[in-house]
Image 1 (cartoon, rainbow, N blue to C red):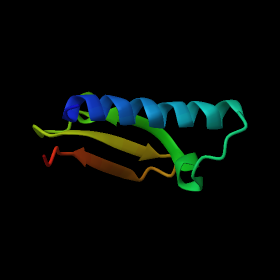
Image 2 (image 1 turned 45 degrees about the horizontal axis):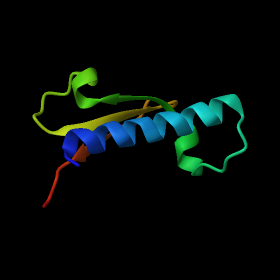
Image 3 (image 1 turned 120 degrees about the horizontal axis):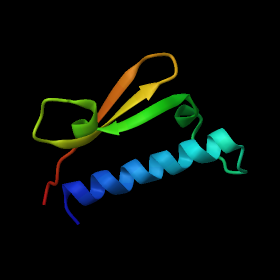
Image 4 (image 1 turned 180 degrees about the vertical axis):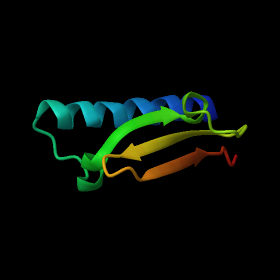
Length: 72
């Protein structure tokens, strides 16, 4: 696994949770993820960095960035 693979896996996981929340599936996601409006990779969001990572936009317009750096 590398940073790209981890980024893709986390992106897919969060997108799946968002889909379940929006369709009313019977899962118990963390309450904080219910406020996520969209998720993009740094590349998709135009973040000027060489790092891999995700940008989460919340429904109330806040944004969070999650940087993924392989440590070993």
